[in-house]
Image 1 (spheres, helix red, strand yellow):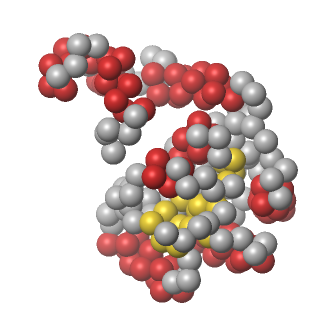
Image 2 (image 1 turned 45 degrees about the vertical axis):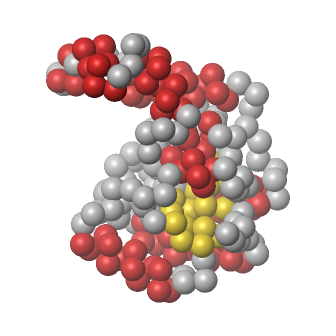
Length: 205
């Protein structure tokens, strides 16, 4: 398979680009074209990963247009696991604001966002202040000048807990009342740790 330096993780293009607030671009259409153009200027080998939740016809049509325009790039369809991509050890990965950002960091791959994101209060994702800063971060990553701090996995665990697990919802959330232990027999496991261990080993893709 072809080697690549950077992976651009596409969003679901029907999602609101400003859902987390400030975004360095007007929309994700502008973001993807300007990003690829800049990466090419940096002489980087580029891979593109489709968003796993792409299902709207309009979104798929837009991706088909991108594939045709950038046919010379490495393309990964939405069914390929991120772990398989991470194992190729790219220098860095880019996502507008997706959850793949903390996955990249966990696998010690530099993650660059394109604006506000769920991890912006932490330093394991590189969040730009504006478009100029965004391209500056890419330039630094291309030269291997961005580094994750030694305690990045501790920070990822803390952030993951606060974002996904901590029961602090403004509105009542039915999922909080579901007891995972009641469903262990479905997976043939004795404890939740066993399920998480299998998940981390890549058995659930």
